[in-house]
Length: 255
Ligand code: NAD
Image (cartoon, rainbow, N blue to C red; front, side, top):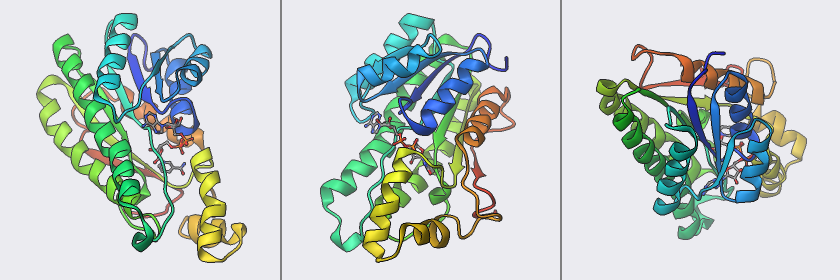
């Protein structure tokens, strides 16, 4: 029970990586708030572990502030934030609409800022410290074609994380970024045929020659791998581990 008596808010937790992290936190004893776009999906996900589901578009200041207030009203505090909600858009830069560019930056960067601000204010007021985890990507460290706004946003999260580590330190608030390789979630399943079409190659080639090419063993990273790292970072209880980004990717991008 590494997270006993802790309260965690996970954005984008109705699906994929966020959902698995929410489950893992609950298994470790945390009370978990599932925040996602659709209230019903968030509630369904939270039902599994007697958590709270809240409707939250992370790009909407009012939704975020109200969601964090609801979490505090239900469970008394927010000790852990996982800023995880995300989208993907596959397109050559020259064909990308400005609106798509802005949407990507809004979900990943505005969302991280708004949730961090709301949770940090609450963590400082409660005086219990806290752990903030950003869902970066190997694309926080390097680029791939057809993903210009995603790569830009994921690099940006590293800057936010380092700044939050500095501003949070005096309050016992740590900030770290998880950088997964490819994990088979709906976000990735959608982009396999999209990339195949854009590049004129088969879906198998997308997996072998793009997604897993630079891993040490040709394997996908799993939901469980990412969730275990999230539990480790959330439960690490000192400023010794803050401002860092940890890659979990079967060796894709060693630093
Ligand atoms: P997913 O599509 O399974 O889940 C994303 C969730 O975010 C969905 O439930 C969706 O409703 C929610 N969401 C989208 N926009 C939102 C918004 N504006 N407000 C609130 N919720 C919103 O995707 P996933 O693969 O689990 O991705 C989760 C995170 O992990 C993303 O930040 C993604 O960039 C990152 N990531 C994924 C992979 C991968 O291979 N799957 C690799 C590296 C990083």
